[in-house]
Length: 183
Image (cartoon, rainbow, N blue to C red; front, side, top):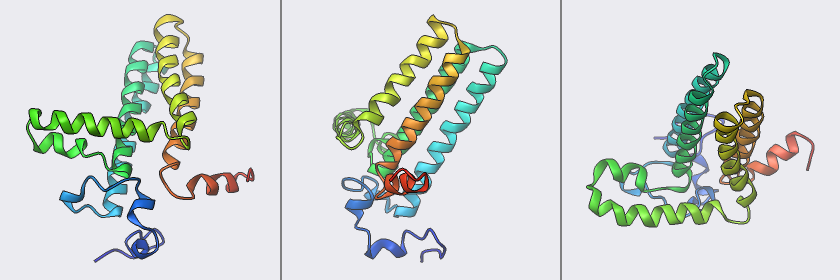
């Protein structure tokens, strides 16, 4: 039975089709994850990514520019993996449950699917900005040695990642724009 509350996605099941709420077929179908459980999976990955990024920021404050770049990049990658719960990347669970040879084919197909979805017109700009900012964080940390530039690129990357993530949730971008009075 589903829980009650203002964010009850199970009750919305009849109004928001699965294919509209989560792009593509649900890859965690064999685990029978509900929409809410998939959102929890996304939130958990996002939280872990945030913790890694905060640890990286602490390293930046204490002077570990290289540690910052590595921890921050790992945090971003874990957060990006979390979007797999929104779009249903089979690799996340299948890797833990299956052997390496059988998953290689699945991994390639799912990676191609993820890339295709990342570069759809609705999110191509956000994707390019996120990836470019990750590169710029490494350049500013290892080549330029500028913590100020690292912080600027971090802020830009988080904003782009937020915009990227919102593209998977129907009407989320429109709601954010409306909150800020842009639309």
